[in-house]
Image (cartoon, rainbow, N blue to C red; front, side):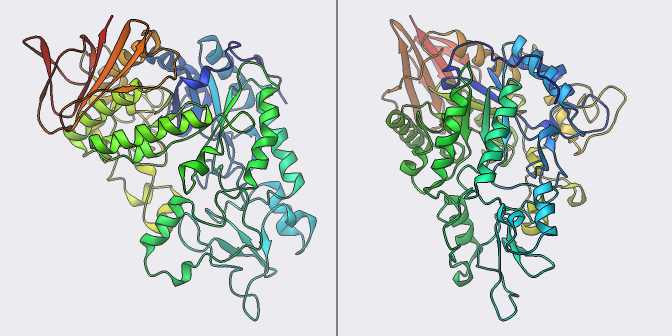
Length: 545
């Protein structure tokens, strides 16, 4: 192991994560430093000043570990090393040292539900006999039927098709995702000890936190009971169950024992090391159980991402999330896009309408108390790429369901008139997924210092969020204001200073007055008498001191 050059965190502010803006880096698609068409750690290191100037507080890196890349790195073969595709441990150490020097924290993805089928443990399990110690680390079972020719139960993969694959000696192994991602047996003490050591390995290298992938899925119900999928007549109902978490392999009570063992490890390191769960649960109350002083610091609230473009939908989601955060004493997390979901420009209508709404949603999100997660490229107003050639798509779900997440993972544009728009060094035309010609106008270079660009909107909003006393470093609640139908307005205060966020989803322009002077807006405001006209699908912040 190469010693970390800066194993300590930035400061002793243990609560930094409560109001942070975290920028999600999809490593493969952020910046390519070695001209192979794939993003890497050195590429991130070179672009750190951009992220500092954008105004974010931390980076969340998707998996960069040794992996066959069957599922974009979420199939890990070695949890303690960097895949050569992305660099080396030395590159990681240099990157985190530079990030900390610039005031940026680093959160890394942890994938504990399953390993890669190339992991040494699973290779040993395949070589061993049924009932062996090697197989006990995973979930192997005998099949049903006279010859064991049927899967042990009716569970389905999240990626489509059976959740079981048969091996040469007749047994079956469980994989809630791709067959190349066998599920671990988290009731096995060796599995638990292994991941506690993995946590310490990266904490020793200076990471500031972890994003826990499939945090709700590690424990499966005793006896592996059937779900009843075979009696269902539509894929829609199955999809609903999979999404909501009402399954015997999601949100089992024993999963909390894992996090109660992890929390003391995190707390033993200085500087507020944290963990955020990607967890799905049937009710808000069950989701809240993942958060607390003896478990994890945060859990993603995906309801904000799923809200429809309506004032009622947003207000309901916001009220519910803030109420839940008060109960558990943790900050709310707000998310508009990520590497698994269609970009919100496209979700909100695509084209000019979608971009207009996405800009307004950004001001709504960044004005709310709590922690905001920004997915790379959303600060550029990138839409989903819908017309990728099928032969270039690499999402394993595409082959099984026809649905693909590749469209939100296209490498982001940095500069230039031709693809890959500065993603790779000058002179290189390589890019693992092609960017569309329309992205020339959306590049970082094309938007920098352009007053009405989406990039400059994000920069301005993030600067105000950090500096304004009503927004900076507080997780207090909000006060809703009376408005006309279809308009959201809430106020946050610090002493005699007020900041009001107004979002117009009414379908017609509205006049805003009485909230003070505008400090940032997603669309051009025009003065009218003592107020300002806010266009359709626009948002603005007003302050009064």
